[in-house]
Image 1 (cartoon, each protein chain N blue to C red):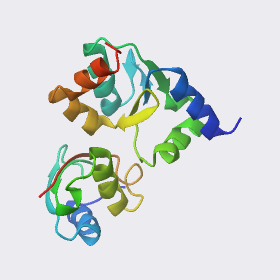
Image 2: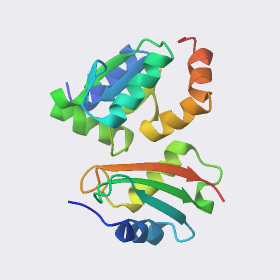
Image 3: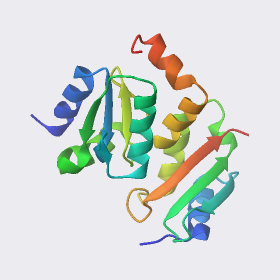
Length: 76
Length: 105
């Protein structure tokens, strides 16, 4: 089931309020996205931990409703 | 043997392990293909585990690493990342350095 960009942004922002989020719909099918996210919460933690925070904000949708979301994270 | 021990066995018995969809010669997902191509490019020997052949491992590995997606790369027993992280590390030359530091290439 496709997940609209706005819904992804809301989910991420609800867990990471200061996040600056840039999402691209790669295939135009609301199912393959790339997201660039920066936040202060990423400062000083590993890439794995950064991506886990993003996955957690998506509340189990990653790997299910959301098949393909390529993530780039950075601190602020 | 429970699935966690089975996964630990796999990870501890090969220095570089890639849990992927499909096999390196015929990946079944673009993300899995990206990581297996990176490993081929770096000329590193690795064990590929096709999670599509084993539903228990497919789910178990996600629980094991607390990571919701496949592929997953393990080096010397340690989870290093999924497709995005591995790609970024490769592009920055960090993956090569890590493999060199661990005497794997």
